[in-house]
Length: 436
Ligand SMILES: Nc1nc2c(ncn2[C@@H]2O[C@H](COP(=O)(O)OP(=O)(O)O)[C@@H](O)[C@H]2O)c(=O)[nH]1
Ligand SMILES: [Mg+2]
Image (cartoon, rainbow, N blue to C red):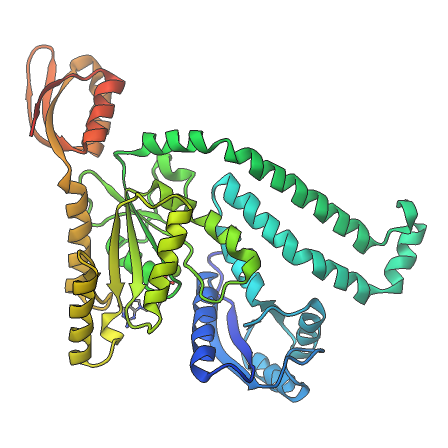
């Protein structure tokens, strides 16, 4: 799936069997989510394909006639089929053969997204464990498909006890999972170091967007930062590629980052790795929790997000609740009523639409105000010998006034108390005065 960013996006078909107990609304919600996940991977979704069936076809997921229909669609212009269920390797194999292009199931799509978003060592290990767990039974089946040929080959090889390729690979997978698990257990001890690192980053203004897939996180991220340029800051080079500065730039600079969205239909085996990809939420100074207000199930999603954030230890990170997509919540009167009720129930929340410029400006102002709320003024003395520190001071504080004498410069600044304290401590810059 590694692709040149400059190449044309792969054209994808999202496809599902609609089982008897599944309503049209449920099917629609799940396929909308799959479509969104596909976009996250950079696919262009060109077609939606469904079949009502009493069960999955054991040979090829869709029935024979439907597979032929899908083949015609693929020939008409698609590169990959995304199936909205977890299917077996033999089903995937049959589909690929008959339809004539690559097939990915829902679990694999999600694993690929997590893989791309896992940045911390713990998150990478956790995602790798899930990926191997997904592969292990598939290798067993692949070995079965390969059958006697595989066994015959292994008989002449140097392997002990006539192990087949499949068995050997499975053992390797088990060993690797055990190794990763041990690594993970070891990392629990590093929590303290993480906490220290978090403290070091305090004073750096970071907004992290969290919430369900399709709530509008990436849209808001783009609107708030109004730029495709990544923040090329050394401090953040090790973090993700989706960190950008709030635009127009503020002082102190506010950085905005996006996270993997919560997924409604998340296979149970992937829960732990999903949580691990969220660990950057712990480094946020402010969590912007984005909710799709037009989704009838938003209250449940709100509760689930809250629980998970608490579980990963982000309970105490200040939170801004953003109800987005209000423009989709019925007619004008309906929208007004919903907005009023949300404001009453969730004090301090923002109700908005990413489609309205005025709403976007209000969100941006609210974020800026959050970071300015606790700023204090101070005067820093910068000796002439230490002028190389000017850049850092200007990056972290707003310089209100400057005067100089024979020894150096006095800078009257406004900034985050933690950042100012850090400047004092690290460079021995004495605050001449700390004003309120
Ligand atoms: N009508 C409407 N659509 C929106 C709004 N915000 C985002 N969208 C659309 O919702 C879809 C999902 O948005 P996206 O930002 O990718 O969601 P994410 O999964 O949370 O990152 C996209 O098609 C957006 O254009 C909004 O306020 N109103
Ligand atoms: Mg997104």
